[in-house]
Image (cartoon, rainbow, N blue to C red):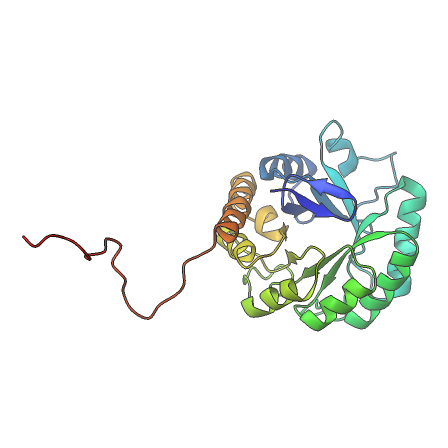
Length: 257
């Protein structure tokens, strides 16, 4: 069940986000319940470089949870690259999630042109970059060729909870590239995560579905089990779909009564 991204190995294939929780304590409890080993942190919203005021870092001391700095809020390659350079200078972290938004008002869709440019620059600078993008297999291949460590195609618009809107594109992306494919954005409940894994995705990132659930702890547990079940189902291999019934107990060679 291990997920390998660049030079790191994770026992969990679920990554969680840190936004939209009521407080840091619930964030910690839900993250631990999820079994995830990595949590995204929007650097512009939570100052991971400031140790003088209460921040998320304090709550995860003594755990095995690592932070994945996220460039949420950036709209250009220049902004994202500058932000990550500051993060690496201040913390030593070079394992990051690249997110450059093109439409900040309605869809929160990524700007793939700026994203591709930033991916090239970051790869040359030694960053291990997990790249948020649209569900386009052509762009996924370009990102891989540009040095991305993983591609994170959206399932649906960020925070929408609509689930996977184009299953075939997720499958096509998985077929097109050899680096990990982690479905990101739009996951609304545990069954969405399971479907993503059954399609062959290497992992799932979930934030809003957990943080905004009526019971974040229970939803985190559900996401953990769904990702595990979906991966097992994918590895087991589903039966072929048929337009007619097939008896589960064959009648061939049965004696007449």
